[in-house]
Amino acid sequence: MGYGEFLDGLAATGVPKEKILVFLKADPEGKGSIQDQVTAEMASELMSVMGLKGNQTPQEVKRIRETTTKESK
Image 1 (cartoon, rainbow, N blue to C red):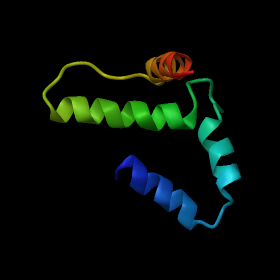
Image 2 (image 1 turned 90 degrees about the horizontal axis):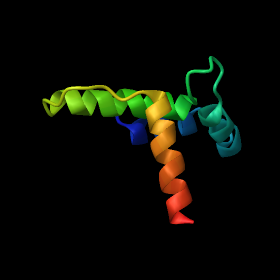
Image 3 (image 1 turned 45 degrees about the vertical axis):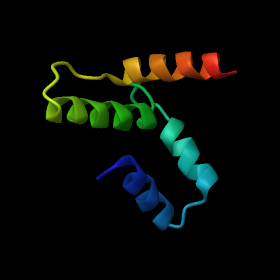
């Protein structure tokens, strides 16, 4: 399942978009937001399929996201 399909599945539940965004930004276990965890898992799987070593962590995804957000302002 791709990220778009994941988001479509959440939207199909009928839950308002605002609540979905709150859910995605939540960090219930202190391991990074749900969004960062999903992105890290998908990036790690993609790296593996491409034959690249390594693995992406939610913390690294958060760092990259925050860096790119600051640079785009």
